[in-house]
Every structure is written in structure tokens, then in C-alpha cells.
Image (cartoon, rainbow, N blue to C red; front, side):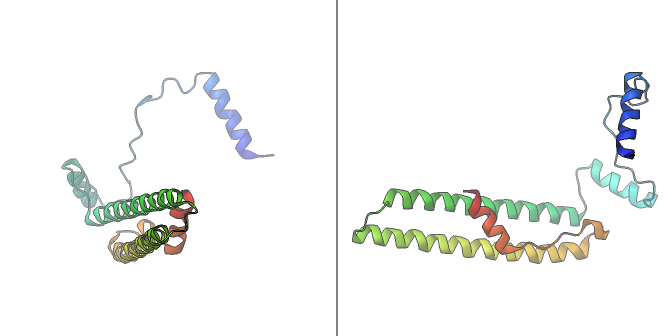
Length: 157
């Protein structure tokens, strides 16, 4: 006997019978902002900040880290695409100019990878700072696996 199937069946039967049609708040978004266990003073302070367009410092830091990571991924992806285009244009040409151009493209790719790794190391430092700022451990973030991130961007192309 699977409880999840029984529960699903009971819910479906209740829906078919119209038992959910007159519920209070039907069609309205759920209000998940309130935490009944949160200190009322903190709740009031957070609501005041939210109503005036402010976020706690740790949340601003988290958003900034996400943006920095997204931007770094985008820059590396553009360089990856540029490199592929350049190497495709060069094709199998073996002249001195083609060899030099290929070397320049590879050098730029190595520099892009180094910048990406450096930026992700900075993001990891930011994550370490963030983890000290958050009000609860559930908001902490894991540090990035830099090489896995490199592989992720490289393999997307």
C-alpha cells in the first residue's frame, strides 16, 4: 500500500466533488513571508526594510556573488565561442601567419581560463564571508568547484 497514491486519490476525489472551491484566499498567491517562530521585532524590521526596497547585507552579498558568477560564465562562454570561430576560420591552413594566429587564439583562451579561475576564487572568498554573515546555516552556500565550473562552461559550447 503506497500512501502517496492514496493521498493523491483522496485529493483528486475531493477536487472532483468541489470541496476546494470555496476556500478562503482561492486564486490568491500564498503568503510565505511570515514565519510564526521568528522574533516579532526582527519580523517588523525585515518587513520595514522590504517595504522600502532594502535587503539585509548578507542577501545583497549573495545576489552580488550570483551576478559575479553569471557574468564570469558569460565572458568565458563568449571567449569559448570566439575561439571556436577563429579556429574554424583558420581550418587546416599551415602557413606562418595561420600558425601565429592559432597561437594568439590559444594564448587568449589560456588568459580567459586564468581570469575565470581567478574570478571564481574571488567568488569562493565571498562565499566564505557570506557564510559568516547569514542569520542561519540553511542560507550558507557551498564553495564552487572551480574545475567543474570550467568544464561546465567549456562543454556547453
